[in-house]
Amino acid sequence: MRIVQRVTAFFLAAVLMTSPFTAMAATSTKISGVSLRIASDIEVGSSGADVSVSTISSKYYVEEVEIKNEPSDEWEDGDKPKIKVTLEAADDYYFASGFSKGDVNLTGNDGTVTSVSRTSSTLVVSITLEALEGESEYDLDVDGLDWDAEDGTAYWNENEEAKKYEIRLYRGSTAVTSVITTTKTSYHFGSYITKGGYYTFQVRGVYNSSNKGSWKESESWYVTSAEAAEISSNSSSDDNSDGSSSGSSSGASGPGATAGSGAWLKDDIGWWYCNADRSYTVSNWQYIDNVWYYFNETGYMVTGWVQWNSKWYYCSDSGVMLANTTTPDGYYVGSDGAWIS
Image (cartoon, rainbow, N blue to C red; front, side):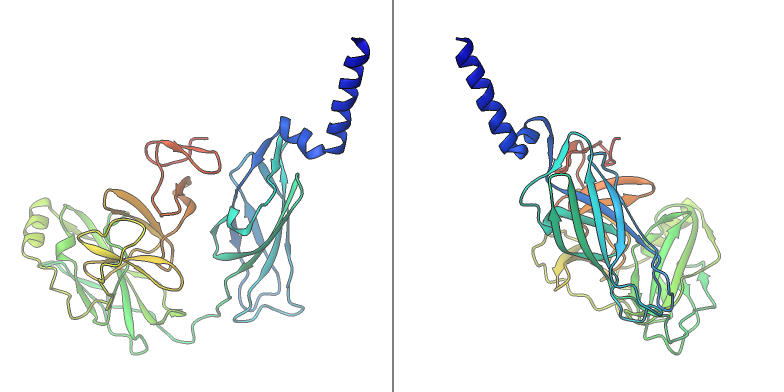
């Protein structure tokens, strides 16, 4: 009996020695996806390359960030910084075999995962950041911002170099509208003024997607509850019909059911949501058909982790913010969608 036991023990030891991954997998937890936040300070004309990469995960950590194409002189317009991020698995964790580019989620500065390579304890992720853009060659600053306190119309002076304008409305520090595009030098916000409070609007001139001015903010305008009720009741959605941006409401199916107040649209970059007034949300959340979606600075729907007001939220592959559940990479989010650490 002792001989049989010794032979069995020897056999098991030999199997574990010749298959270290099997032994490690029996006692460690697999990492099947990673989420990284990129913060880049690289600008056109700078000679340095300051990029940081972070993660909220306790399963792995960032060991090294390396710039692969740092220029000998300075960064130029159109350059795409390439970075290599080395991750190390924490104790009792390992990176799964078959790890692919699709298993890496990026937030922060826009970038594309170009390749990944792994061992059980190390994951190397190669990322190409979006092309750098130089300062606008146009003077697109806007002045003369003013309110018409009778009906809630915002006015500003014309900028001769601007082809259009982007505007947004705030009540206190809360955004009331997403970014709205218009070719006029006024916009009627009456239908959005539904509550009492201090209202301001912001506006900037736009030449094209790469050339936009700085946001300018109006003086605050206090509206009582009674005044808000009167202004909104006398307003119509057609008040801005000849000046807002020409988006399409094709009703194309998207990551959620088509809402009565707008439509999901898709192009070569991704999904975005066109509101009934032909505006679209940027750098903010929007509640559509009873669920929340987040849209990035260019108006496209975001998936994966989103950092908002110092909290982390997770949007599924369909764009829907998760709540009261565990995310695909193993974190629990509460009823408000925020990660519970």
